Image (tube, rainbow, N blue to C red; front, side, top):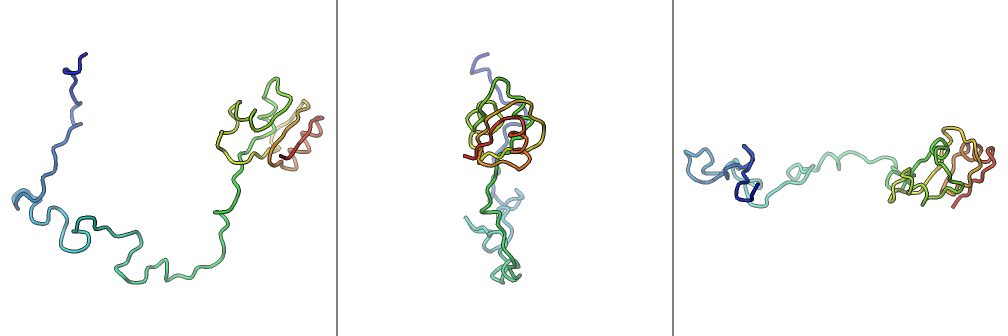
Length: 147
């Protein structure tokens, strides 16, 4: 294969839409932009929710309550069962979890959850523990440390 033998696949290249070339072309006069007004102009666009100057619906309706979703902390969850599968690891912290692929490198704080069983003593350092996880780690002879 040589560069001069390369060809586009069929349908990959389109003809340029030529607008404003007479009424017979089907795209003459207004060039496919409809009538007059803001949307017919170059750079003319209307933002979402704009109602032509009338007070928009989202501003007419009363706003009630408070939503904390902007401020909540998103935790990266790791279950006890996942910690049990880590072979030859006695101390578990964020770096170990990232290295083993249980937590993404740029995930938020780590929370250990109590799903599964733990059969060996492990020293676990995390940002938060569920009550069940902390109880299971300590019952197996391990240590749950909040960082």
